[in-house]
Image (cartoon, rainbow, N blue to C red; front, side):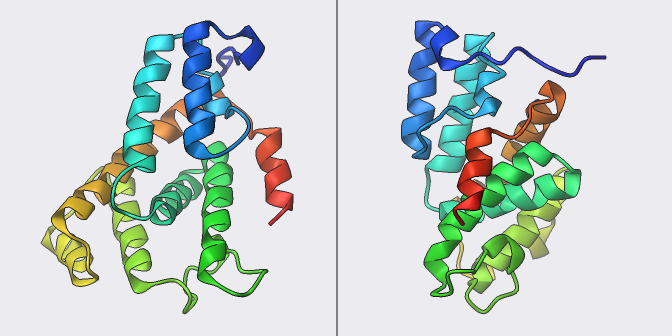
Amino acid sequence: MNKSFTIVEYPDASQEVKVIYDDTKKTLGIPFVLNWFKCQAGNPALLRGNWMKLKATLCEGEVPNIIKQLIIYTVSSERKCNYCAEAHKLFADMLGKSLSSDPDFLISENMDSEWVPESYKVAVRTVANAALSDGHVDHSDFNALKDVGFSESEIQELFAQADLVNMLNTIANISGIKIDNEIVELSYSL
């Protein structure tokens, strides 16, 4: 079976898809459209729905985006979803620069560092475990998150990442997309 969907580049996209593409670039703060979106552009309704879910779950809310990126990176790495692992590693490492004065600090490789708040460590560990165990959580998981300062609303937002990473990994793996050249180039700048 050929695992791929057609990649729709910006110049070839319909006007409806270009509007979504433009919103992804603006919201994510990057000057290019990710392959993850391009592989869904043959079905604008699907692309729009998945972008709305990703935007609301990953880009909005009260929980710092770096935690969300780390959750997606951690789960994707464990599941061997190379596309998502590489992309979200880069985004996490870019955001992680704000935590350390060391220019060589990469949060994806230094989660045990004293520069990483305990709340980040607990959130990543707890939500990654939930995603990898098909959502099996118990009271101790909720209590661990509450004990490091997360509110009920933030806990809901955190566990929504477990659902999001499942969608991201599934689409990336089924589509057979490769990491964006632009992401590779950005990673060299870290």
